[in-house]
Structures are given as C-alpha cells and as structure tokens.
Amino acid sequence: RLSYNSDTDSYFVTEVLNDTLTKLVIPSQYKGKEVTSINYIKMPILNEIVIPNTIKGLYCDAENVSKITYLGTLKEWCEINFVKDRTG
Image (tube, one colour):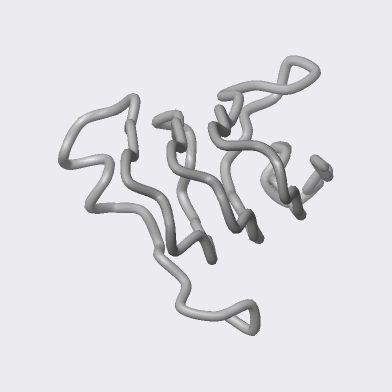
C-alpha cells in the first residue's frame, strides 16, 4: 500500500504484509511522484527485496531476506535513515 505525503510531495510504502510473496520490488515512482520511504514490511518468507535509490527512510522487519538489491550508489545507501522500530 502506498500513501501520499504532501510535505515532501512524494509517496511512501505504508505497509506490506504478505505471507506468500518471496520477492518484493519497491517502485521508484508512483503516479509520477517519487517513492521515498518504506514504513513497514513484514513478510515471513521474503527472501529478496529490490530498493530504488529514491528511498530515504526504511523500516523492515524481514528476518529471512537473503538478498537485497539497491539501485543506487554506496553513498546513497549510507544516507538512508534506517529505523529500528515503527515508533521512529
């Protein structure tokens, strides 16, 4: 599910709950606007996630992920705000 953030004029992933999906590809754009944050992913059998370089914040509770593909530079990856829990 994607939600619009009027403060940043962008979309963010609000919630991904799925018990059967093994690969998740986050889009870089939705309805012509950037997707800049992933607020919650909980997928017990997820083993691969693809993250675009538009992501600036990330919370993910996916313990079984064995492959992460980031579509950006190492510098951009290091600038992502990784959140430890849903409260921030």
